[in-house]
Image (cartoon, rainbow, N blue to C red; front, side, top):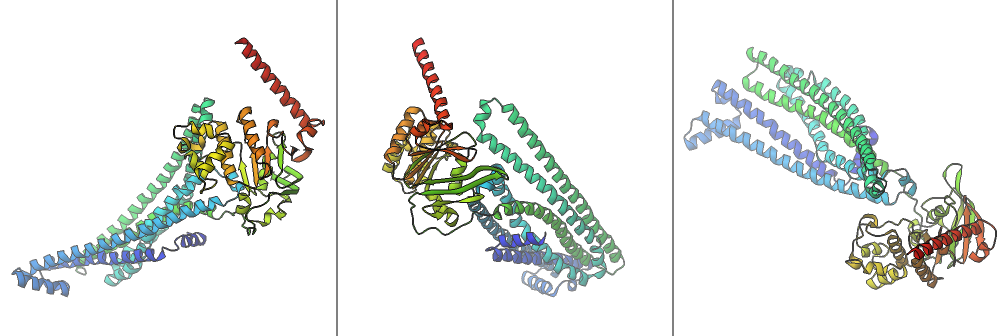
Length: 611
């Protein structure tokens, strides 16, 4: 365990260290009680062997005489009874201490695991979008669940066991040398090999567990990805393909776990051999000393029991090291999230609500060096204006929205909201100024009302209905079996694409944002519903700045101004009438969509005539 890992572990245990210290203390107390039991047993053997009560400890002998006098027993029998009661009592006290140790360690570890999970979850809420671009959702889920559980198990048992092993070694080793230096030296002759083997396997297990944990993360990511896109898989009849690829990752995980199990099995085999050999060495030497008259049967018994109590904790220390190797890997994966750079936090403006004026000055955005998605874009959008943005795929339309909300930072230029550089204002405040509706909105597996309340927790039923009417989705909701209390399924799977978009629009309208952004958010609705929604937005004109990104020109026809983007550049700007009358990309889009509309109308007419 390196210094950095130790510091991380020390940091994680903050708030529960007193409880851990108490658990280790009662473990030491339990060990002390258990250490005394072999001494009592040794004295019993000596008394039985010599038929001489004086060979026993004075306290037990006096208690035996008192018991014999009270009940009229033979002193020898009374001594055996007293010794048995003492052994049972000491064992009971040790067990009680072990119970307290387990309880306190469990309480501490559960509290730490809960805090760790919540800290990770909170951290994920504040990480930049670029972090999630490079991360697999399934792997992040495993870090928050399986890896935290691995650390919890380590904290609940292994941390205390480390303290117990250290206590036993530091206390028992001097005692053994005081009792019999010859046997103590022999008892520890193989100890360096046991400890060296433990550290060797610790390094091996840690490396293999890292590989195993990562393969499990890959398997979880594959499973999560498949379940998310199960309808696409079925639509393309790719079930067999997905099953085979999942099977390949499952085989990889199995192979890695088998290697991990082989390492653990090899360690236990070697460790058990060395520990058993160590006990046999002491037993053989003790038998020789016993035959020579320099050691009694009771002394040999007590020494053997105490040697076992030293050797097996050392063996267990190897297990602790192996388990700590796994925990350190999990802790490293957790720290990858906890130590990731959060989005910067700036002071919020004193104004609660912005007017909605936006200015972009020479904005350049690159996802990859040398490949600008927005290149020198300069735009002024006055407060309350409705602006349409069109352009071919890859023109930078959605990227523009991402940099406005500071999901990504531009490499050059600046963006102002009401004259304030957005880099100098709090992101949370900034994002509250936007109501963004994406082409593929996310809905939780909750009720319709719950999804609407994500915008405002204090919204009442009348406000929900009003927003739903404006988004042309109220009638659809009213037709559901439970109305606004109907569950929409994971990601809104029980709704059509158009219903999901309209529900997301209603959610955004509830916020009454200074800036409303529709990122191709009406692509899945029919033209009649689109006209109804656009009419509702026209009635709102002036209440907020509206930015409409669309491929369907009917969505931007009534905008105050239309921006035409191509390869990150603003190449045209004007009203629909002006741009449609001017030769250029916008006019070509009008001609293409006009031809498509005519073709569709002709097909419908022919189909009607045929009927």
